[in-house]
Length: 147
Image 1 (cartoon, one colour):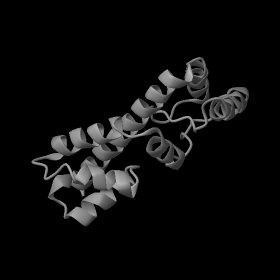
Image 2 (image 1 turned 180 degrees about the horizontal axis):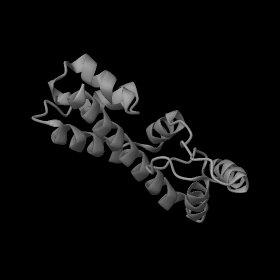
Image 3 (image 1 turned 45 degrees about the vertical axis):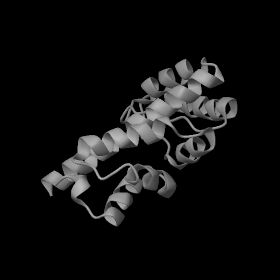
């Protein structure tokens, strides 16, 4: 089943389930109707790339911390510290589109992004959030297709 075959309230709820706020999901729906899920995903991309900083921060704040394979305890502790330093530096939580990294990989990724200046890191965070929402949409499509 295609997500675009859902009634508007159910489609909006699905978009919210994938990480969009109600207002961002509504902005996506305003770009419809959509012929297929690819058009829906393009609309999601368009809206997310056009978000102002406040709306972006709201979405970033709603993302749960990354799921991590624990790995070495020292790497785990260092990754948690790096994530706190990231928030202190940029004012929003670390978001990554990478699904379930090891603690060592997460630490490496956070350390790399800690070296960014605020403006490019804001763009990187937006892109990771966009990719995360897209992955969730694809997972939802696959779940609906299989069930």
